[in-house]
Image 1 (cartoon, rainbow, N blue to C red):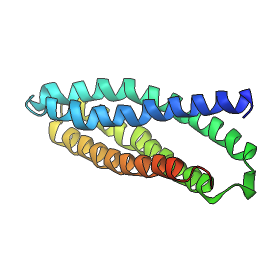
Image 2: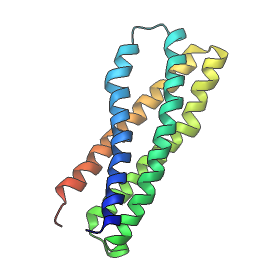
Image 3: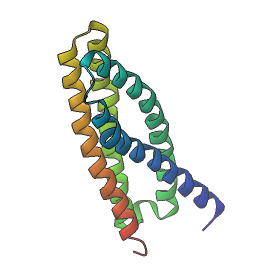
Image 4: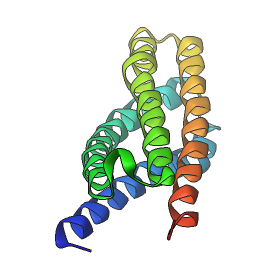
Length: 152
């Protein structure tokens, strides 16, 4: 394995750890902890958390996309083993879901908080929650594909 491949793999896995780990923390730790707060406190906090986290995810997505493309080319491009193409496809779907959350759903949260429209904000946060669960499942399947296909 060349140093370039090792560096790309390290950065790729670091991006995955930030993204998946952040979703696990937000869904399983932060969300339940905020459940007792009134919407007037909870929704502005979610807006702030999402604004920061989405910047980290955007950086991770960029790193994952660039390193993933590099690794796919290094391991055969169009002729690479099927698990690499499966991981790439799942990753692209996850990135599209993130894009929808960031550019379609998150602005609804921002508008709801600015207008103090707590029911609309709560619905938008619920949409984020459901899409995060989808991305968590896809992320776990992708990681499983990577681990279980070693040596193919």
